[in-house]
Length: 209
Ligand code: PRP
Ligand code: URA
Image (cartoon, rainbow, N blue to C red):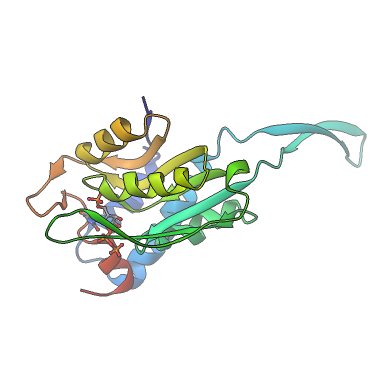
């Protein structure tokens, strides 16, 4: 069963409060999402493998550690996931970036896929799938299906706010995919929006309606 990690670091929680605030405008919203994505990337990369090397310090040779060079890919679910990409890349700048384009049909709430582009060597990479919102879970489950169909074997899902319904949907469909979130909210409303949530993440990021 997928594990759920809630990143309760004070900086993440503080910034998330202002992301939720309806009075936060587009520019500040975008900056905060970017900052929280960086902080979450720091936590999510805790298990990255290291190798030992010899390093000449000015004093003597030391046994030191560097990243083992595991190949990574960040995949935003378009469009709101785009808001988290640069923040993650600040810490892992060599990661490749794929894209999965999905939107929720406003009537059925079912995800509709319109674009997929991934790095060539999918089987060899660890994937971090990013999207600010996990609501019904339809989009995340479909995006993970899409990655797996193309050969992805190791996938982590990272989002800002999750509803219990979305967490359950991933756990049921993809028990091998762990979920990394900044907050687990109460539930969904009748329109599939997370309560209390932050509203429509894509619209708030890009200033659309
Ligand atoms: C939002 C959000 C997720 C999805 C979550 O995207 O960014 O992708 O809804 O909902 P779900 O868990 O019920 O599938 P939206 O479909 O509004 O598209 P957008 O990013 O283009 O605004
Ligand atoms: N998508 C959003 O952007 N917000 C929600 O609350 C649910 C889905």
